[in-house]
Amino acid sequence: MAMAAIASPSSRTLIPPRHHGAAPSPSTSGDSSLRLLCAHPRHGRRGRAMSVSTPAARSRPFVFSPRAVSDSKSSQTCLDPDASTSVLGIILGGGAGTRLYPLTKKRAKPAVPLGANYRLIDIPVSNCLNSNISKIYVLTQFNSASLNRHLSRAYGNNIGGYKNDGFVEVLAAQQSPDNPNWFQGTADAVRQYLWLFEEHNVMEFLILAGDHLYRMDYEKFIQAHRETDADITVAALPMDEKRATAFGLMKIDEEGRIIEFAEKPKGDQLKAMMVDTTILGLDDERAKEMPYIASMGIYVFSKDVMLQLLREQFPGANDFGSEVIPGATSIGKRVQAYLYDGYWEDIGTIEAFYNANLGITKKPIPDFSFYDRSAPIYTQPRHLPPSKVLDADVTDSVIGEGCVIKNCKIHHSVVGLRSCISEGAIIEDTLLMGADYYETEADKKLLAENGGIPIGIGKNSHIRKAIIDKNARIGDNVKILNADNVQEAARETDGYFIKGGIVTVIKDALLPSGTVI
Image (cartoon, rainbow, N blue to C red):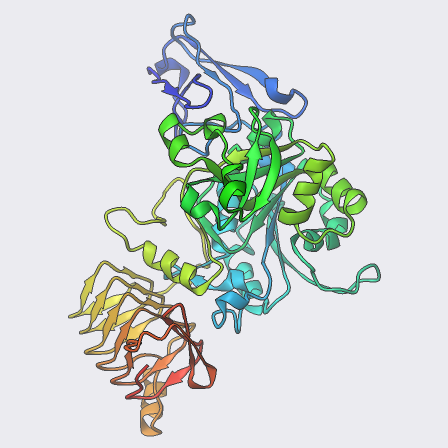
């Protein structure tokens, strides 16, 4: 079978297209020899040639030479040793999540619901599993009960197969004879558990954040790390001038090695951070549009380098991005940039969280799609019934599992699992997180007899530009419209907050019938 060649924008070499599924059999493949150059730590940037025999013309062999290029679908990986045995994933659960409050009132930031059926933690865990990384720790210290429960239900029995060599495990902050303190930052969190991480016979630590929305093949990231003989590789996002001032920027040399950092630079300092992003794989046109690169807070560390930096070189450093990695550069460690040119969002604020969720309703192409067969997003199997929509008008929306939607209007909204929406309700530009459980008809009858309100959205209620957290009880004829365009308000005793003009109803809150916000 003839194989078409694809030109890699950075190296201009020819590489074969990626095949999903079974490889072509020798009997149908022609008579050529396919040479793959595989990354290997002992072979450095030159790699290791591996011949794969196929039937057809030897005169034009395909050569695949991986570099620190963009995370594109046209590249291939052939890690040796395999990522499942040589890489340990470490997901940082973040701090108290004060900017996401009240969504973090009763849960850790990575446990915040996302996209109707998922939670934020499902993104990095799924990226790991899709990248053949099955040894994963999640570090957390705030409100970790719901995160623990979700991870054990979603991934507890599904990792590693019969060998049982894979896991997804939560590590909470704890006191020890050596360190009586809680995690003081990203680097300190990893340092406190180095005794456990170094027990694993791996080559690299992959450091990830638990509150980012993106889809990335970490195998390509790790391969670039090995190919360039890097001590640390930092995932970088190309930026235009307008967005660049909000990020920590990096400057690179002609080999993609990071030589300078600047935190949220402006003016002349910003201009000085311009780089030639074609070095990392962007084409000339995109490189002109995006002349800056920003750190994504995603890193690959060689194991011995991580141990040395955290224990010996910078034993007092608390943060990777502002202390350890700039420090490693200053003492001569090889710190490389790896360009990721795709959708990525830091879910750090209510506004970012709201926009990221509603971004999945965009047409014809959403900002982030959960519909990718080659790299699915996994979550807890809940075995819920299909959603029931009765005489409702639903447009430009995403509906989760197990919902009951009756004779209402829903536009440009995300409706979470087990949501119950009553007759006459209007839901616009809104994120409903749904519920953790169903109430029985007997429960609802008892509530009605005692003047209570069932979980869900009551009759003839109108909600616009809001986030309704789980298990909220919204009565009949409630108006959540923020007609006065209030930008900030803390009304916790009344069951809601307003941040950036977005009304957020707290988990388990009750808004009586007739409430107007």
